[in-house]
Image 1: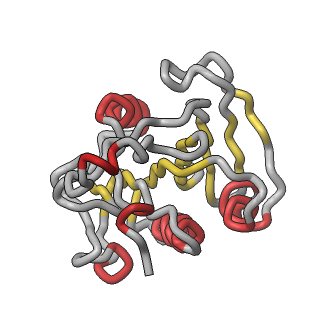
Image 2: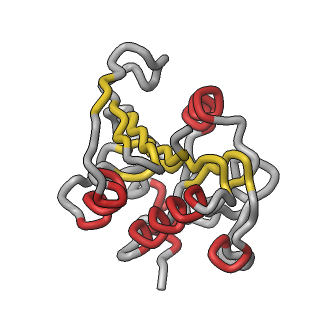
Length: 182
């Protein structure tokens, strides 16, 4: 069960456009709704990405943050890239290295030995902070921390008295990119 207040938000357009320039152009928004989609083609609660398993060259996603949803989404994204249904998958998620999902899908994907290539200074703003790439035999994971709490756009159904409480991300966000090694 997911909560609208927890799981429905819109990535600020300026931030999405920066990601699209670096890792796009995206042709699928995997976890969206009509009001918050970033590209024309999107999957939603009604048209689940898990059920449709659509093909895409480059997929964008801000998966649900509620309990258990990030683990499911990251695992699914990795699987879709490894099975070549998606060319790459770029996700905006909270930074949380203490969680099992972070350790499983980001810190040591596929349990492989990791090689760290420092990319500091090689990425344009807003990604000009430290970034690194974790590499296994079949999958590369790029992590580009914007080092900030993004102010997500609030859902349109949120009553005006609730806007004060809606301040976007509760913790800094990170962009994670899954792509197959060449």
